[in-house]
Amino acid sequence: MNFNPILFRHQLHRHPEISGRENWTSNYIANTLRQLGYKPVTGIGGYGVVVKIDSDCDGPNLLFRADIDALPIDELSQHDHVSECQGVMHACGHDGHAASLVCLASRLRENNLQRGSVHLVFQPSEENGRGAEAMLQDNNWQFDEIDYCFGYHNIPGYPIGQILTRDNTFSFASTGIIIKFEGTEAHAAYPEQGVDPTPALIELIQRTSLIVESNATSHFLVTIIHVHAGQPAFGTTPKDGTLMLTARSNSNKLFDKKCAEIKSIAKEIANKFQLLYSLTLVDNFKAIVNHSEANLILLQACKELGFDSERLTEPMRWSEDFSHFSSRWPSAFFGIGSGNEHPTLHDPTYDFPDTLIDISSKVFEKIIRNMNGLKTR
Image 1: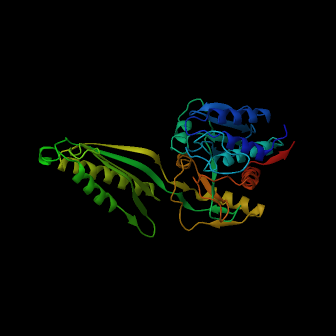
Image 2: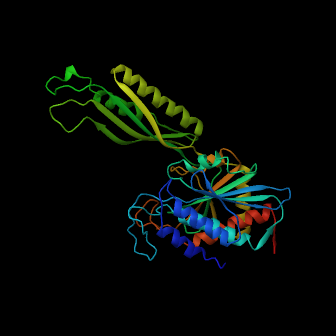
């Protein structure tokens, strides 16, 4: 098979699927891998696809991961591979990440692995933070104990092709928090006869907004997303109220501590105002914490390839569920610049730069060559 990674990526872009519904995407990836001579395992943690390349000799066991899901966004681009699925598009570049890993598979078929093993993991449901954990908990995936794990994300706002690395935390932990209060309605002329959740919401907003921390090593941020109370009826006081916020931190320990504090505050306020309450976490991500040895392996590969690299002074504030891999095995997650003027992630005109497929797959191949050894067939 004469594999063309750019045409492959364009096909993925034309057929985007949101988290948990990546059926076509998974089949297209698996069928392409079969045409390349591999025997992919499918249906892992939903629509996950895994390929294992084994040398049958002792050596490092490496894992390379790409995400495959898209976003519920209407595409506004004008190129010839725009989304054919109304209201869904690859606005985060996961089509490019998947193409990078299939391109790596295409490169590896020309070589024999000399030692150890390589896992290529195509992960669904990254955007909602569920896919990585679901794959790791799936008993149908019999993975080795991985020595090192690698993954990347394209990042607009940096020179195209620039490798972006960082020691320790690469991206923030985050979660959506939905807090609901429930009281009782009353006639608006006699509000004292009801239990109005609005004062509780006001206090909750004030107190959670103060739960911030920013110093040389630790950061915690709360962002109010949505507030709702009652119904648009002038004769009735509110019965219920909802606050939605997002919490973020560069430290998993601090993140857990502050989220527990928010839960405690919500319970305290509910009791104070004699309200029923519930608290729900949505899209829960841990921080990606890079391992020093894995980072050195990555940087050495980039140096030998002559690729420009930059150490980030601060972690990315967005989150990525590669964190489930990095919390389990020594890992290096990195960025690749998409261009200084490139549209931002989740923009309706976003399109992954095809040139990054070659760069990323070469980095991955170089890591394998250095760690496992490759011999041309």
